[in-house]
Image: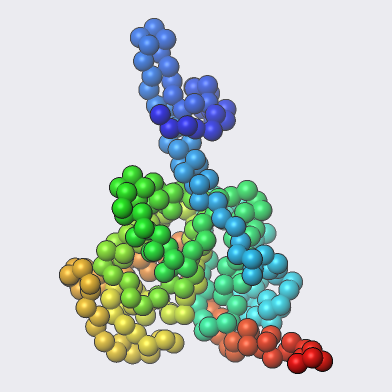
Length: 269
């Protein structure tokens, strides 16, 4: 039996364990609160920590003050209303060049979610797919991981559009995005590709960075039909737009390089 949280039943039907017991017949049946208890327990396992590099991120600290004001204003409003945003399954995503502040803004949102007590999973897309591949050795572990990724309060994914995703991995990623879409659960994401190019890349079509033309049709490693994968790429992006709205654009110079150049040179160097 799954160990649940034993918080009071919101329906007033069980004693907090997720089951309604009929003492006359010595039987038990699921309470209406059990599904939400299981989902909460699974999502708690995904609770993340902000990576060390980003623990000090703030809307008032560089590079944020130098970023696009409309984009920062949108993030500020989202963070200010984080509970309402997550409970309604609304997310955000950012598109732009390397080093333009996308991940910093995404980490600010994830940090706000964690501080508000919401479970949060933070992955780059390559890392997420590697974790899924590692869990394939155990069917139970795979199911548990996908359930957790589907039910965590906020799923944060960096580097959407990383080339080289296979048909099998695409299916797993689609199942996660679709489950979150169906359940009204929030996603935040970063990418260097606009939606149409992102759909092509996820679907097995390689595109040039920055929205250039398609340069080659990739052969899928597992033999899945190209058409089916292309369609799945489109479906993923369509659901992301439904969850997150239009991507927030961040373009310009590499902020990381700017900060390195601004660092004072020590007397010993």
